[in-house]
Image (tube, rainbow over all chains, first blue to last red; front, top):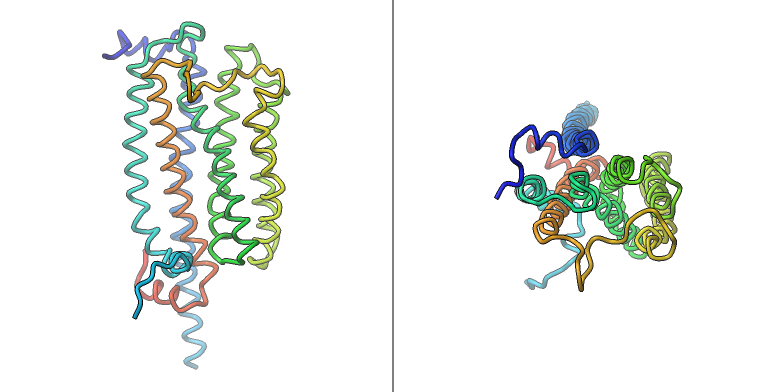
Amino acid sequence: MIYWNSFSDFLHMGGYGLYVWGSFGVTAAIMTIEPIVVARNRKATLSRLKRQMRAEARNTAE
Amino acid sequence: MTHRFNLYHFASPATFYPLAGALIPWFAAVSVLFGLAGLYLGMLVSPTDFQQGEGYRIIFLHVPASWMSMFIYLVMAFWAAIGLAFNTRLSGMMAQALAPTGALMAFLSLWTGALWGKPMWGTWWVWDARLTSELILLFLYIGYMALVAAIDDPRRADKAGGLLLLVGVVNVPIIYFSVKWWNTLHQGSSVNLTKSSMAETMLWGMLLMAMCFWMYAIAVALARARTIMLERERHTDWVKAVLAGGEK
């Protein structure tokens, strides 16, 4: 079922290793980093909005 | 009380926000499953290509990224049209939420294309119709994001950005049909409804990877849309309720 004879064959990609793994590496990096950035943005936005809401509540109470 | 199904109900951010939150983990999980299946078929099971050797395996990223770069733009243009026609709040937020992912897909299409072109054509880049129009697509994404970011009033930013999206949509059929309309170095489409030039495992690997990219894009865009909604609707009661509820 598996096409490759050995793991080193798989890494070597018939001489195209640099091009194939260069493509997969950058794609994997982007698809890992993008969700992390989105999640961080969400956290930062949430805490900023909560701070603002508390500040507004204090101002109206005074 | 009537229980008529109403699309406007889902177009309201207050309804959409929790719905999107519930859907994101499912889209993410399905994306991972499709990705694992696609990588297994494409990278481990599929045989070599008789012309391109193992270098052809870049197709499992290049084609999904290219498809998504065009499809996301069409979805953004659709939201722009809805927003300009009906003045709905949600549409501009959706277009903005999709843009960075679309830009990354266009970049990945060019990046994987360059790494594929070098061993097969002997060059990283040529100014041919397919490559140039895809580069223009990347610039359209970047231009849209810069334009929207430069305008302080969100509703006006949506209108200006929406117009740019609608004008730029002409580029998508140009990308798609460029390999037919002009002589280009780029090969024709690999998938054809009547006959496909690919072996069956390769085709399935590629389609599974395309589904993986699609579900990924939906999950990330929904997550981004939720943050944009909180920001833009921060003075409304529903956002205050969300914030007071200890949302993390």
